[in-house]
Each structure stands twice: as C-alpha cells, then as structure tokens.
Length: 136
Image 1 (tube, rainbow, N blue to C red):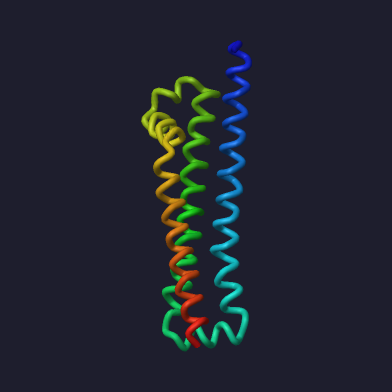
Image 2 (image 1 turned 30 degrees about the horizontal axis):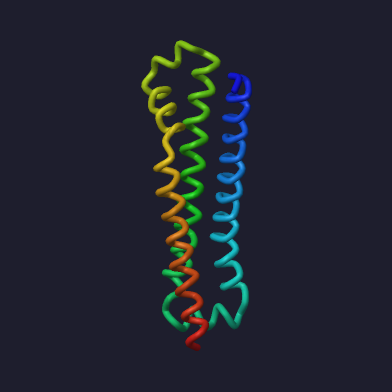
C-alpha cells in the first residue's frame, strides 16, 4: 500500500468518524429538545406528567443531556481552534494552551463519557415519562 493510499484511507476513516459524531450529536440535541416539547405542549400529556410529580426530573434530565452536548461542542471548538492556530503559527505550539488543546483534540474518552451521560439521561427521562403515561 502506498503512503498516498494509506493517507487517503486515514482521511476516509476520519470522514466516517466525523459523520457519525455529527449525526449522533444532532440526534442528541434534537431528542433532548424535542422530548420535552412533545411532552409539555400536549395538554393531556403535560397534565399527566405534572400530576405525577415527575415533571421536574423528566425535564431536567432532558435539558442536562442537551447541556452536556453543548458543553462538549464548546470544548471541542475551542481545542480545535487552538490546534488550527498552532498549525498556522508554529510558535504557538510551545504554549500550554496549544498543548492542552492538542491533547484534548485527540482523546476520545471525554466525548464518550459525555455521550454516554447524555444517553443515560435521555433513557431515564424517556423511561420515566413512559411509566407515568402508562400508569395513568
């Protein structure tokens, strides 16, 4: 395999990763906002959930899940900006901000923890909403 093919394969893998990450984050944000909108703009659903006493925990779980995704986006944006600037201005690579940003840009575990946290919060809120609606 030539180095050009290897580089193209790596680029293809990155594009695949980027595509999945973008779709997953869009799904998380849409679900985290759409769930409460669906539950609380329908009078019958809202009445049942409010009467159950679970409205605050259901809404909070949805909104915290979305908040985690927004924070992740902000951290990734800031890290990638510093990496970009370091590529354009090599002297910046000696700064602590660049080193931290470069480290952050290449770790996956932080993104996975945030994604799993959002997924857990959405699963909890969805389960709570379904159990409330199924029991009334």
